[in-house]
Amino acid sequence: MSNSRLLWSSMTVATAMLIGACSPATDETATDANVDAATTDTATKTIRIATEGAYPPFNMTNADGSLSGFDVDVANALCEQMQAQCEIVAQDWDGIIPGLLAQKYDAVVAGMSITPERQEKVDFTEPYFANTMVWLTDTESGFDPMAIKDLTLGGQRSTTPGAYLQDNYEGKDGNTVQLYDNYDNAYLDLKSGRSNAVLAEKVSTKSWLADNTEGFGIVGDEIDNNDNIAIAVRKDDPLRDEFNKALSEIRSNGELARLEQENFGQ
Image (cartoon, rainbow, N blue to C red):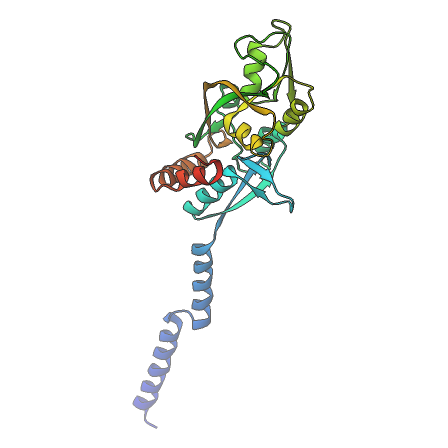
């Protein structure tokens, strides 16, 4: 073989090696990279949400342990709008804000009213519902909201009606305020005659009356104390802005109104 032929062969081999070294990754490597990218793109964000599970029709615990109610429906609608996965857990009311601050969950959707005291600890979204308060009593008791004296008044602890009772009636005109860990216990004491009336949110009261139609009713006018319900998150958490955007969208598309109608009726 001539020297020129040998030289040409050597150059051809060297060129082939160089091309091989500069060629793209193998199909297997490229496929792995594509799978990783696809996994990242389709990964679903999980938002952990706490509710009380003892405040119908806003939130309740069913016989099988599942959670339902207006708050649960709103939380699920927001997560769907945000393309996130909802993980909803029950938490006793008294520990619901401490649990949020301890990072047990990311948000509270539990019929929680915006108050100055709570705003010192957490941030709130825009409201998703507005409450009014009413008096619930035995309709044969003669209870008069305009002349409350020497009576025992019930409510739920750490709520706006509870605070209203304490501010306006505790220790005044012979009245006693009895606050409970949830409204179910407050209504139970009313039904058994251990209290004269319960001050509660209108929606909660009407829900209870649906199953207790005999002998009990709402007395007097509704009390509007500017009670706005919103979602609580930790201070400066960008999740608040995400919730606000989703709330605006489900309000605009009619989903929020549909959920109100479904849970509260007219």
